[in-house]
Length: 209
Image (cartoon, rainbow, N blue to C red):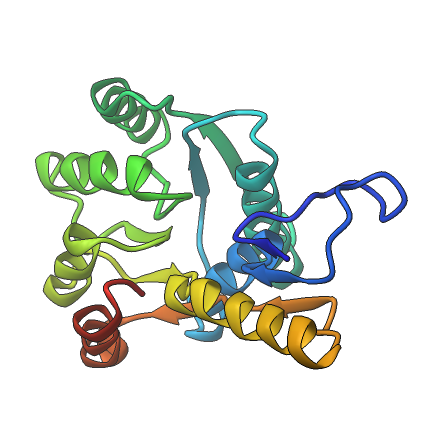
C-alpha cells in the first residue's frame, strides 16, 4: 500500500501496490483555490510561491490552483514564483514580486516553507488583510495565523488517516483477502477559522492533522 505519495507512472510501470492512501495533490491545490472562489472573491493578480521548482507534487498543486482560478475568472494573471527552500531568499522573492506587481492581492504557497516567509513579508509591508494568503499543509504557526486573520485557509492532508487506514487495509487483506479500494483520498480538507477547534482536537488526540 502506498502512503502519502503515489507513484505517478502508469500502472504497468509503477511500483506495484494494492492501494494508495493519501492526498491527491491536484485536488489539494484546486480546492484550496476554489475555497477563495466560493467566497465570491475575484482576484486581480495571483502569485504561487513554489519552493522546489520541478517537484512533481508541488507542480501538481500549483496546476490545481491555476486551473481553479482561471476556470472561474478567465484572464486573471496567475504566476508561479521560484522562492527556493531558503526562508530569507523566499522573503526577498515575495518582496520583489509584490513591489513589482502592486496589484497582487492573492498569494498561494505550497507548504510552510513558503507560508512562513509570506506571513513575515505581508507584516513588514503592512499588507496583512489586504493580500489574501492561503497555503497547503499546516503547522502551529499557520494555525495561529488563521486564528489571527492573517491567513485565510490551509489544506490538511489528514496524516493520522494516512497512518491508520493502511494498517487496517493490510490487516483485512492478509487476514481475510479483502482487497482495498485502489485510491483512498485523505484530503483535501480546507482548514479555516471555523474549523480550528476541530483540527486542534485532532492534533491533541492524534499528534497531527
